[in-house]
Image (cartoon, rainbow, N blue to C red):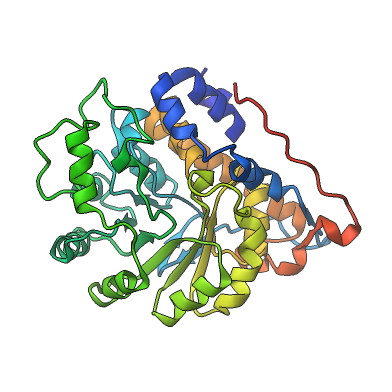
Length: 374
């Protein structure tokens, strides 16, 4: 199946399932417990109805947006995800190139097979953002922050909804791999143990701080000149506390349903977070974004941009850099068309009045029924 034959994100998901080895598909598609949150992330978008405005000149649409001071051609970026090497030999280098080709950005995960310097060198014209875990050794954290600044990264992302890292317990990845792996953004020097072994997992437990606290966030904020984004916020109170501590971006996320099952879909909590932040920080969202219409709804409810995780990996698995680019192109085309039909010629035209919850019309909620995936 050629890239051009795929016309939707669902097509790329199916292709990835066909191409990926079982261990890779299992890792990427893993959900917490029964997968209620994972399923609801996508179903929740259907609970919002669009109220288009007509008789407007939408012959030309501009999908560009400014995020953290950088201009993106589309309000869709790639979320920090681990182990891109499972999907393609070029791993994060291919994902970053695909994002750069669409003039948007990938947040480089620390569990990358390539160093942050290598990714920056591979995409010299790209926008570079870096995700960093919390470490017990503050000197190590400072070295990583300095490395990111020297390599030209323009923001630091911190995941706060993972108090226990399952990778360090062996609970979310296979114990052995059919190809070489390394994590040059986690350790100053790679441990002398094979990844997946009990000894290696002990090195991770010794390095990563679990759980992190607000004091750790404050330390990062004080030790970098870069904007700081907190990923994993679902509580309005947490959003307010983040803003009080000088955080620049609030990233609404439930970890793609991979952490605590039973939490709300991100699109459902987005309006509350936006109200709590009150314009004092940018707000982003991931979780369940599969169409351009989903993007439109999230922007109308207050997100500055959305992030995609699994869809980018599906594109990577299908055809490397070109597959990632095609996934982003599909979302761009769908968003542009949805904007035209909704009466919006530019991102600033997308207002809250464009969207209402289905309960406004007395439409009963649709029960989410778990189903097998291929």
